[in-house]
Length: 116
Length: 115
Image 1: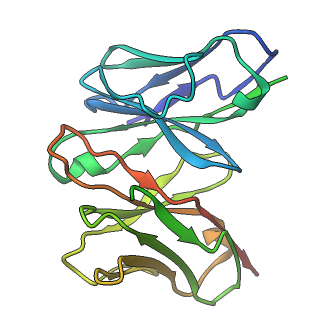
Image 2 (image 1 turned 60 degrees about the horizontal axis):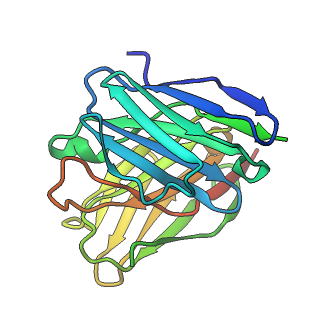
């Protein structure tokens, strides 16, 4: 299996621009998580989906952030408009929500976002 | 109450030494405690995990020690190697009856093993 695939790996944009991050979960997994990692705040859960439905978006910092999961194999995290303080590494993770496996999350390699 | 407190923030160990990272929690409903390992430029990956019905779990050079009464758990890396240099995250979750479990992560420990 190719694992969780994120794109792009690096994104540099200017303040005010729209940014879209993409994630392809592991085939067969039915839960998907978006995290943000910074030196100051560590690894923060932004939102997670189960069977393509958003379950908990309490970690989304502002209305500028939105996430969608139109089908089981694709999710996006969008920031509009972007600000310098959004600069971070964004991770997507997926899991198979049954039994003990529902505790195990598999992470992608992340997208490093720099907002100038 | 949902927090997991992790220490130290960074750790330097000589090759062959023992690395110890500690975590503490408040929520007694937590029933699963994993450790994730993250190398530079990569996402975190599950290293080892424990449930509170046992006090210790060992996998190779990695051991989790769990103290339920103190609400603390720790990762011990025996015979630490330069290849173990990475950031380590503890985490906790509980089964609230939903379809999936949310992990609460500690703040991470940057481990450097010197040759």
